[in-house]
Amino acid sequence: MSPRRFGILLFPGAEELDFVGPWEMLRMWSLYAGGPPECLLVAQQDAPVECAKGMRVLPQCDFATCPPLDALLVPGGQGTRTEVDNPVLVDFVRRQAAQAQVVMSVCTGSLVLHAAGLLQGRRATTHWGMLPRLRTLPGVQVVEERFVQDGPVWSSAGVSAGIDMMLAYIAQVAGADTAGQVQFASEYYPDGIRYGEQPRDPRAPAYVRAG
Amino acid sequence: MSPRRFGILLFPGAEELDFVGPWEMLRMWSLYAGGPPECLLVAQQDAPVECAKGMRVLPQCDFATCPPLDALLVPGGQGTRTEVDNPVLVDFVRRQAAQAQVVMSVCTGSLVLHAAGLLQGRRATTHWGMLPRLRTLPGVQVVEERFVQDGPVWSSAGVSAGIDMMLAYIAQVAGADTAGQVQFASEYYPDGIRYGEQPRDPRAPAYVRAG
Image 1: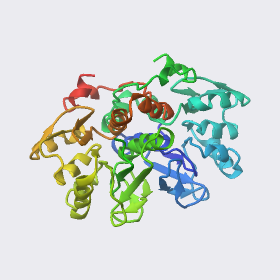
Image 2 (image 1 turned 60 degrees about the vertical axis):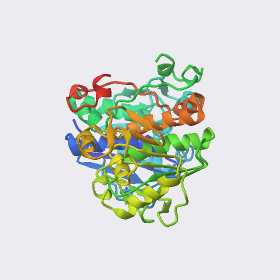
Image 3 (image 1 turned 135 degrees about the vertical axis):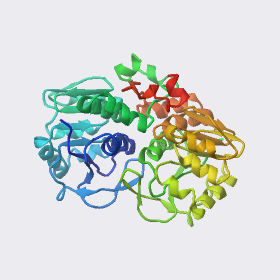
Image 4 (image 1 turned 30 degrees about the horizontal axis):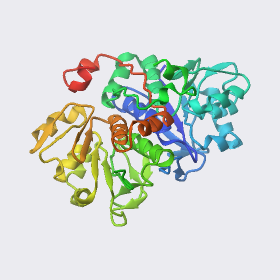
C-alpha cells in the first residue's frame, strides 16, 4: 500500500545527499507518478538545520507539529553520533515508527534506528566505515549490501545508496513502471565508472568488492 | 589546476538533486581529499530559496557579496524557465564565467549558460526532456551524452547526472585516486538497475538507449 504521508528526518549534521537523494525520488513519485501526496522534512525545532557539509535547510514541520507519518526516512551523517543520545529525537523516531508502514535509514541513520530499538532481530546495513561499529551493537544482523529490507525496516549503505533504496521501495509498492517513471524523470542512469583502487579496499563492503 | 573557490548557484525552482549531488562530491573532495577550500552556495538574495520540489535552502552569500569564483555550477529545474529572462542572474553568471577556470551546468542549467552566451560554438547537453528545446537555440551543438566537456564548459544530462560529471571533473583535475576517495566516501557505487521500459523510450537520450 502506497504511503500517503512520508516524512524525512533532519537534524544538525545530517548528510546532504543522504536525504536529498531519496527526497528527489520521493518527490518525483509524488508529483508525476501517483506517490505520497504529502512529503515532509521534519526537524526537532522549526529552525534552519545545518547539515554535515554546511548546507542549511529549513524544515517543513517540527516534532510538535508533525502529524502521524505512514513512512519515515532517517538519514545519516556525522550528526548521528550525537543524535543517538538525544532522547527527544530517538523517541520521535520510535513513536512514529510504532504506527508507520515503513521506516528507512540511509548511511549511519541505521544507528538512530538501532537506538530507537527498531533493528532488534533484523538485518540492516550502514556506511562501510560504520559496519564495524554497527556489528558491536546488540540484536542486529549486519549485512554488506547496497540496501536491505527486513519487513517494515529498510536500510541502505552510505550516502548515495539511499537513491537506489528509494527506487527499489517505489518498485515494490507501486511497480517497476512507476519506479521507471521516477528514474526517467530524474535521469538516474549512472555511468557506473569506478575511480581508483578503493573498490578493492578491504574495508569496502561485500557488494562493492563483488561488483 | 584545482579551483580554490567553487560556487554553486541557487535560484527559486532549482532542482534539489541537481545541486546537492555535485555539492556532496565537491564537499567530500574539499574536506577529505584536498579539494577547493571554499565552496559557496550563492543566490541573488540572501534569503531562503524554495527549490523545485519544495525544499528550502539558505544561501551562503548573495550576488553582491559573492567573491570572484574559480568555478561555477548552475543547476537546472523548473526555475530555469524564468531565470533565463532574469538579467541580474544571467549577468552574474556571465561575469563570474569571464574569469573562472570552469563553468558547469546540470540538467536545464545549460539554458542559463546559453542565455549568458557561454555555449556559443560549444558542445553541450541537458535533461532529455529539454534536448529538443536546446536544439532550437543558436550556436550550440547538442549531444546526447551523460555529460560533456568542451574546453572550460562542462554540461550534464538531467538531475542525477551532475554527480557523474563532478566525479569526472575531479578525476581530470586531481587524478583518479582522488575521485576514487570521493566516490568511496560517498559510497557512490549505484546498483545500475533500470526499472520499466523508459530506457527504450524514443525520447531517451542516446547514452541511455545504448546502455
